[in-house]
Every structure is written in C-alpha cells, then in structure tokens.
Image 1: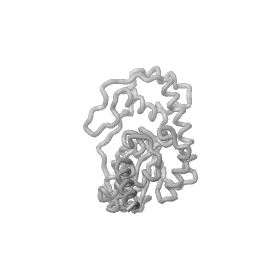
Image 2: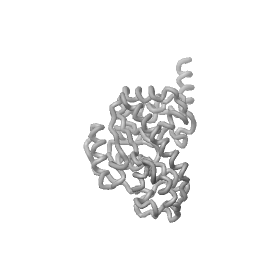
Image 3: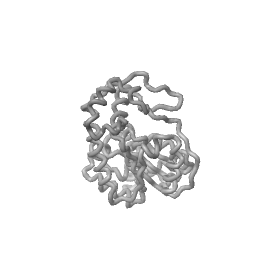
Image 4: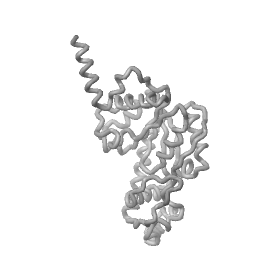
Length: 263
C-alpha cells in the first residue's frame, strides 16, 4: 500500500511538472535523436521547417527557452527525456530540439553544460551545429528585429517599411561577442561528432534548402523527402534599404577588418 501511495503521489507531482511524460507508458522514446546547437537569428526556424517536412521527424522548439520551459530546469537530462516523447505524441520516430549556448550557460546556469552535451552525445543524440559566418549581418538582424519587432517573415509578407538607425558601437560589440561565442561553441563540440550547417552557405538561398535537408536526413539515417518553407529573410541584400544611417555605419567600419561584411 505504501509503495502505491508513493507512486501515486509521484505521478501527481510529475503531472504538474516538466517531466510528466517520463511516467507515461503509452509513449515510446524516439528511435533516433538529434539536437541543433545554435544561436538566435541563425535560420534555425527555417531549418526546423525543412526538417519537419519529413514524415518521421518531430523537430521541437527551443525547449530551454523560458517561453516554453516556464522556469529554470533543475534536472535537464530528465527534462530532455520527457520532451523527447513528444515525437511519439505526433506519430514520429525521430526527435530533435534546438538549444542555445546562452540558455544553458546563463539562463539555466548549468556550470556543467559541456558535460550535459557530452552525455547527450553518449546517449545517442546526433549534433547539428548551426552557425553564421557573417557576424555583421548576424548582429544587424538582432538589432533590426529588436527595433521593428519583426522576427520572421513569410513569402507574401512585406518587409518593414521603416529603416532602423544602427548604433555603431553596439554593432561592433555584437560582432566581437559573436567571434568569442563562435570559438566557445567550437570548443564545446571538438570531441563531439557533428555536422555543421552555415546560414550563408546552406540556408540563405531557397535553392540550397533541398540539398541542405538531404544532407541532414542522410546524417540522421533517413531517406530524403521533398522540403519547403514559406519563411524568407528579413534583412535585404542592399543594406541601404534598411539602415537609415548607412553612410555613418560604412565610415565607422571602413578601416576595420569587418568592412568585408558590408560589401
């Protein structure tokens, strides 16, 4: 009797928590798992759209984003295992999720976040490292989104009619921060087998989407399927169309190594 009471109390407790699916025997764990290690404004939503075109794949949201987790996660490995059963809820056999280094390191404050990544790898997770090489446009995308409150656009949507004024010092700090984080991410993954997807090479042009998806499907041991997304980029190729003080920005960066990003 005591044991059944304890189990009942445990289930009630779990039902109110982030770990409820751990005790749901009707939901199987996925046969295959992956994670997308990335940052914001890297095209991760586009990539998620593409991967979710596959009938076997359920690519989840940023499960460590407070918008979805609701609070700090004390037991990240249990939480991930619980989340992974979402694939079964949707009739899928492959589970994936997105995670940012800042979410692990600063928001949830895991001192051992590198160990968490290694444990996931040892548990069978395949790693997809999604990054941007153009640090200038990466930070600019953050600035534009913050000012316009436009984070995603679909085909047919109009780009922001309002130009943004860019704080050059803020932009420079963002570029230099990206360089540091890029090195840290690479260090995190140096002993973890992974594939790298670069926004500029693999996602920015729609014509590359099928090739990129096929590459990832092959990495995951899946047959290729046709993919598409309605999302489009929010930063135009011609930066003068979106930056109100473009000449000021150009003059600020013209004698730096970062001028290459404006050309």
